Length: 599
Image (cartoon, rainbow, N blue to C red):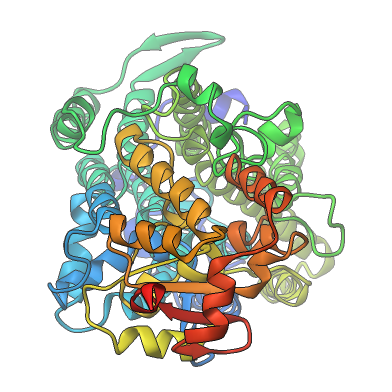
């Protein structure tokens, strides 16, 4: 977003610590300075009411998204099945011993994230903790968004609407609700932006370090932001400037974050090298219909992807073709338009010079976004560098613009009761957003086979379970038992790990659709499988896809291999064994102990 010159580096920065002590009263409950000091951010009763209202609406959005987690029975957020299940080892070290999948995902966990779940495991089950953390993270995001917006413009209605807009947006995605490493990016980034706008560079350094140990992408973004703030623009010409304290802060953050992240980037992984862009282009797993469909032909799909682009999955419930990010963008564009007429709009000229932080974070984000494309998969997937920084900037800009318009409208409608009018307008817009239809989606899965889960949990802790992905992906979380392989865990980024899993998948498909029980028995002996989950729908050509590749019904190259099996035979040993010796049968899944294979 391009802001007019008076809010870029061309103008002197406002030192909020030496701002006048007797501000001019603002009818909306704020102050007339462009920046707000520490106490007046939330210190006045009126501003505290605005903040409380924003937090209440945030909790409302969070509750809607998280409600399925508390409906009873076994429920799990989809990514908890990858990034939290292994933490059950903290409470019971006997779980997942010698398990390649658990070892792999534990190795991916950043040290701070792992330490957090280790600490929580002393008082609460890690899976339960993953349902509570999102509320804390959501409220932290809301708080620092409010404080940041107040730093940039004194109208509390603007801070309220920025917070509500961002919360409305983020709870329509499943990042915060996961309680996984990526859930920490947005709250830490919002806190870092506030600390920089408040003139606290060392706090920003600490937050960059915190981000690095919780989610390395966030740490890289935090350092990049500190770097961008060293650049000042004269027209279209960038120049390295910055104060001595800015350079020291950037240098300290760079050294510490590099020291934390460097070893993991430079040392060889026990799970093999990271897949290169050239290798990924030859793998169906990265093409259309693959587990990670990064390379797609349609440019809009590429830009809308949650891997390569901006993740435009969340759309307006009333206009399903319109991504809600586009709606935020339209509202945010009001701010530069209002600044163009600031001489005729009194509220617009109170924007702090610290608002330059908004285009700065966009520059840092897009710089890393491009770099992640150039170094594909070395910096993980590019979308992570823009997915939350862009909505944060847009929500803050939109909130400020709406706050300015609210002030102007209140002064025009009720010049003698502007505070009441502004409050009514701001709260009215927030309430309208709260009742507007939206797809609050926390990405939760229910256990549709509780009898199967109960049976597996009653078995020894070292058993190994094999079956189609829809049936086994949640077994480690619900039943707390090892699985041979599942689609959810088959990430193709580390070639050693994925090479082993791909062999397992191919062998499992051969055994699952084998004609002879002896072939199934040989497979079980080779991998040490103790229990098979046999889904009758997997033996019907029209339904097999959703059993193996739920929820997408696509998992190339394996869905094609499964289709080929139906061309060869319609006699399947596991299906016959399910009729003969199932230990548990719930009408859809039969539990077949491997011991019955040679009977």
